[in-house]
Length: 222
View 1 (cartoon, rainbow, N blue to C red):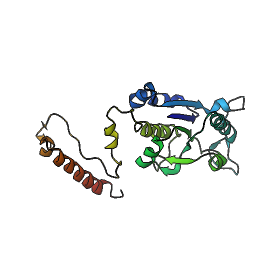
View 2: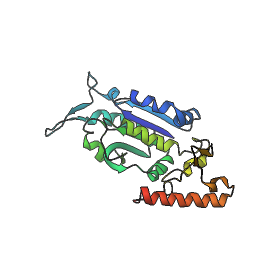
View 3: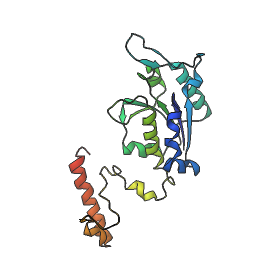
View 4: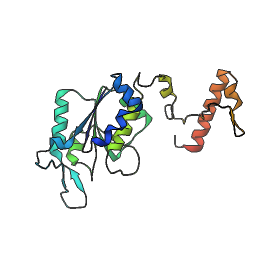
C-alpha cells in the first residue's frame, strides 16, 4: 500500500510514522508513506497557501490552486483508490471503514487546516471525507495519523500476530473482553478462574459473554 499525505505541517507527522507498527510495516515494505508539503506547490513567492474567505468571515481558507496542483501531479503518476479529506463534518471513522481502506492499494489523505479548504476541491476531487470525532483540532494532521495507523495495522504482515487485529474492539461490533496477565493474584485481586482452566471452549464462551455485556453497558449504540 502507498499513502500520500498532503499537509502544511509535514514535520508534525514524521514522529508518528517512525515508531512502532507503522515503522516496522515501512521497513518490511508493506506500506509506503509520503508526506507532501502543500507550500511546495504554491505559486506565491511567500509560499502562501491560504487566503481570506469570499463573503467575509473570520478564519483563513486553504486555496484551491496548490491543492489542485499536488493532487493532479499524484494522480497523473498512479491511480488512487480514494482521495480522503480530514474534516470534522466527514463520516465518523469506524473499524468498518478502516477495514475497507486497508484493502486498497493507493490512498491520498488531504489534511484540513484553518477554516478548511476551498469547497470546489471537495466537490470535484475528494472521494471520501473522514472525521475522527465530533470536535475540532488545529489541523487535520493528527486525524491523518490516526486514520493511517488504523489502516496500516490491519494490513497482513504489519502485526506479527495477525489474529490480534481480528480480535480488536469493534471488529464484530462488540467491545473486546477484559484481558489479564501475570501475576494471577495481586493485592488480593484475582484473575477469573475460567481463564486459568485450560478449557478453551469455556474460555471462548466467557470472552464472548463478556464482550456482549461490556458492549451493552458501555456502548449500547453498537
